[in-house]
Length: 226
Length: 289
Image (cartoon, rainbow over all chains, first blue to last red; front, top):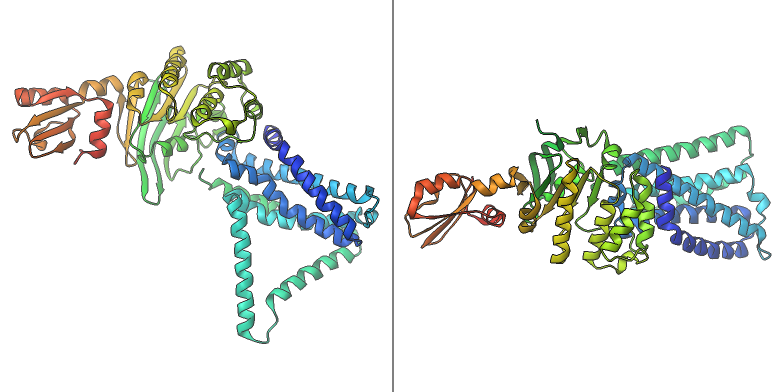
């Protein structure tokens, strides 16, 4: 496991610096533009959760090195576990970077103190987990094509939903309902009182999503022919 | 009883339009086995199944007496593997790639690795993508040969290499097995390479094993029967494995050259078959038993 983590570092260190630079630019812009800590938190989580699967699998997919990794003396389960570990380490760095920039920059409008609470960070981790947990198994199984499949499928689903809404007439717009539901859900979590029960619930959800994602990835990666 | 480095029994893997079926053979420890067959015969599939890079549907693969799925890490630690197309991180320097891979192998010998790079005229600071295909292959070979592997498994290692280096590589493979502990299995469709170094040959065609036995035994017993006119019919040839027939002549491949000689006498010319003859007749001949 440690050998795989070291390998990921050695083969991706330059890419990590490039990603950090791009993230810094994005976070600088967001810290300058956004004054609501909650909006900053959500946009930061979206960026990190969406970009990390690309970053981790992108180069492996581009250089077709999955077969190299699987020819090393390690089990595929360990490879998957290492990918998740790398993902979370990278996302941890991403979050820390965003918060540091928001805290230290003189032109930042974001109050970092409001973000640095157990509840806010838990919600952030939950959003990141949902995105990362959903995208990563497909990326691991199908490479970058997996992300494209997922995006295209989502778009097609959206188109079908819109067509159905048009055909059914006055019924509720399904897309609007879903998007409104997500926003309401996020808002409810961000404004919810940080009771121990609520925090435990968030922690359990984060663990459950990651565990489900990991086991799905493990199963998909085991059937991948290289 | 001969100690086997690899034992494969009843291996099956199906793709759309291709089935590798009931593949059974073994590679004795301390020898070189060549896996031969035309393009698309299933050589790469067999090697990938040994490495568990693809899933088998049926069958069993044992390497050093261990199941290749249950004991995957232990087995792979003792294998030096070379792909038909080397895939490494293209934008890394050779020494960085090696630095990423070395910790996985307890017996990694950095001195040996650098010595091989020097011998293959590869600078450690060269970026991988700047290498030609042949040089990439040399790098893959250097990696595979740097951790004192007990089994060298190579898929078309000589493809894309210049004849001089090919010769040197084959000599190196021959030197590797001198300690009688190391084993080499490599696939190739360059039959001359196999004739030069292989102790055993496994011929695979359309996903099935045609034969798997000692090279000398094959080259001694297989032959080509050449006859003019209509004096010899294909069905008369003992041990017929394939033939080409025109209005004026018959060229037939037999796995029993001695019987063919005694049967036809002066009526036909019976020559020993080369591996190339065998591959040609079995792949392109009109019939094979």
